[in-house]
Length: 498
Image (cartoon, rainbow, N blue to C red):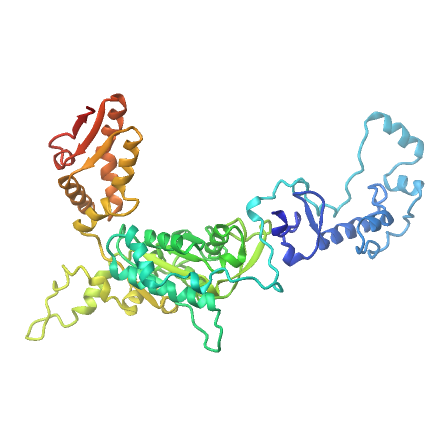
């Protein structure tokens, strides 16, 4: 298995594909020929090389192909292989005095200036991280495509699978299914003819808790492709404290087990993308806003990116590899608060007095207002035109009403209620939720205005006492949760085993 990964130089931390053939001294120690040549050059330039036991003839036999005698000559007045000259260098008058000093305390030869090239911590394998191993790539070898055309599910099949896990958002699931299907058709065929298909990245808009991240996770699981989820709020411009922009590709590479070929066919979901909007009325440099948008342009479009392996920022101690983002699908998601106000202002420009005027509150109760969004609205929100242009597919999501929240509680394969029923089933207790309880939970969640995330918080609150008391009595057989219990007007119905 180790042969499938590239060796990394313990000194300069370059990979085998960059530094070339390496000398492998142990399982965790490899040194490239450049570092070894520099080290020997430094030692050859030093008058102490004989004291250090560095015999060029012996080293030439150990490392064939290395040029060990191309360094400059020793300084004038220093003759090699002469004991008296060595004593002069060390500041001693007679060889006999040196013999006397040996009896006091044995001292190793002092390390000459300029020979600190090899880090002892690196030589012992202290900085070797198993996550930084990179799989080898052979450009001459013809590999089978990672994603085959026949293995890509059709859009209607993708949507049917999404329906099993995601409730509502019919239009969003349809848009994503078609976009992902077309993207992976492009990847699988690799533009077999003269018509080159361009990449179509996706921008998801929707309030918090409406299922943006969950839909992307489900899609990646159905397609069996590596997925990386990054947070845009942690990104900063290069040179500032925070994660570099290339760290989003590093996360994808780690999700693909450091297999570059597999990572180049993955999906990157950048959440909280609305936090990168330009700050109005600012006179200082926006290193975590507009600058990050500009830095992401090449990533979204497709380019060869130098990516740190096993780290979130570039530095001399981290190995680097090159990843082509041409076939990586970028999905950017954000809540975009107050974007609806921008849409309303654009739609009610005719508001005023007269026959052709429109009421300013005409769109206040429009649940599909986000579906009327345009690129101009997003640019007015604070996203730069070049960034919006690289996200041609806009996928708006609806806020969840009470009926959708009730369905989320019980319909999906891994619904929240099914999870608690499974927990109590392990204690041989049957858990039942009646319709009034489901409706009461959905009503409370709607009031919190945090989407589906509020459901678990509410259930955790009223299930605490039940989960605590039930293990005390082994005779309990069934627990029924009612609407009165959710509203604090009564308790659950407990039935004992017959």
